[in-house]
Amino acid sequence: METRRIVQDGLKIIFPLLLGSLILWWMYRDFDWSGLWQALESGMDWTWMWISMPFGILAQVLRAVRWRQALLPLGERPRLLSCVHAVFLSYASSLVIPRVGEVLRCGMLKKYDGIHFSKSLGTVVTERMVDALVMLVLSAATVLLQLRVFSVFFAETGISFAELAGRFSAAGYWVTAVCLLVLLAFLVTLARRLSWWGYTRGVLHNVTDGILSLRNVRNIPLYVFYSLGIWVAYFLHFYLTFYCFSYTSGLGITAALIAFVVGSFAVLVPTPNGAGPWHFAVKTILVLYGVGEQDGVMFVLIVHTLQTLLVILLGVYAVLALAFTRQRQPVGRLGQ
Image (cartoon, rainbow, N blue to C red):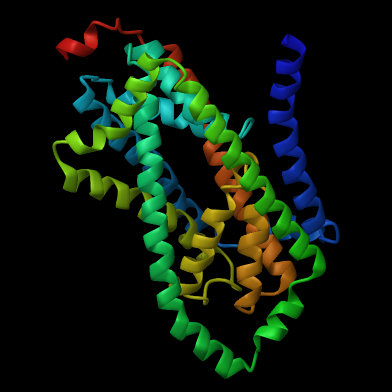
C-alpha cells in the first residue's frame, strides 16, 4: 500500500513535468536559441515588462483579500498577511506539483492562524466556482466581441477557415487532443479526491459551510469587485507585455483579450504554471493574428519565463516571511 502511494505521488510530479516538457520540446525543436539572447538584450522594451509585473502581484494580493472576506462569515479571522503569504506560496508550490497549492494554502492558515482546514478548503472551492463563472462570462463576451473583428479580418486578408486549418499542423491537432484528454483525467481525479475529502460527516459539513460561505458575505459588491479585479489584474499583467515587442505592440487589446482567454483555459491542463499548453495556445492565437511563427514562440517563451520567475520570487518571499511569523493559537480567531 505504501509503495502504491509512493508511485502515485511520483506520477503526480513526473507526469505533468513530462507532458509540459514534451509540448515545449515539440514547439522549440527548431527554435533559433541565439536569437533569444539578442531579443532579451536589445529586441524588447523592458520598461513595459517591469510595468506589467506589479499587476501579477496585485492579482494574488486581491485573491488573498477576497479569500479572507469569504472566511469571516464562518467565524474564522485569519490575518491578512497570513492569507497573502499563503496565496504566494500556493502559486509557487503549484510549479512543482500542479494544483497542490490549493490544499497547501489551507494548511498554511491552519498552521499559522488556527483556521479550520476543511472550512478554508470549502471557500477555495467557492472561489474557483466564482473564477470559472467570471471566465465563462469573459469568454462569451470575447467571442461576441471578436465576431465582427474576425469577419473584417477574414474579408480584408482573404483568409478562409480552410487556410487557417491548414496552418494548424497534424502535430498541433495531436497536442490539442492530448491536452484535452489530460484535462478530462484531471477533472475526474479531482472529483474522486473531493469525494474522499468528504468521507467523514464532520469534514463534509465544514467543506459545505465553506462552499456556502458566499451567501453570508457581508459586502457582496466588494466581493464582486475583488473577483473582477483579480482578472483585470491578470489581463493587464499579460496585455502590457504586448508592448515589449514590435510584432505584438500593434495587435490591439482585442487580440490580447482572446489570447488571454484561450491561454487561461490552456493552463487548466495540469502542467507547472501551464508550461507547454499555454505556450502552444497563445502562440497559435498570435500566429492567427499575423505574427510570425518564430516571433510567436519567442514571445510566449520570454513572457511565460519572466512571469514564472515572478511567481517563484513571491514564493521565496512567502517562505522567508512565514519563517518570522508567529503562530497564533486556534482560540485567537474567536476574539479578533
